[in-house]
Image (cartoon, rainbow, N blue to C red):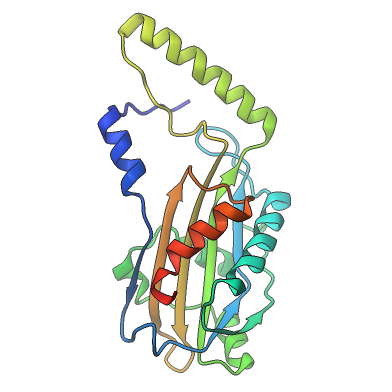
Length: 224
């Protein structure tokens, strides 16, 4: 298992500085409306690190249902909600790859990204000028794997402390990890007008409605 040494001060800094960020490119919140919300893409896997990482459909469905319930209740200028199916089990699906890529793209890079034609067309057909997409990217470990990893982690920490008098913190033995990445685009120009991120964090359980509401509220703060 890969392990990373984090001084306590650095670890604390990572925890407290991980907050949502967003950027408008050509307009502001008052003009980017009304919105058509495209059903979110919930790409959750069952693991991370050196363990097998596969799309975890049961938890992804729960997460998607939670998102679909919470987002319309936040007070965003959403006029329509567009059902949309993502073939997340197919790693070659171009739309899914684009949605996942939102988790890794920079604020400067996303401005020039090309919105997939099927998403663009779905929003155009809705009659709304602006479309909003959201990717939830993270993992929820199954109970057996999590128990195994925590057992290994605990044993190695104790041995390391006794031998070397310091503690190593692993980055892959948490029960869940979650990040939200959202784009608003103009169907008339095809351009991205807003990009927001709530970076991956161990603090938010993607299956917990209260956690998701807190995370979504931070993500869409500019509109609330």
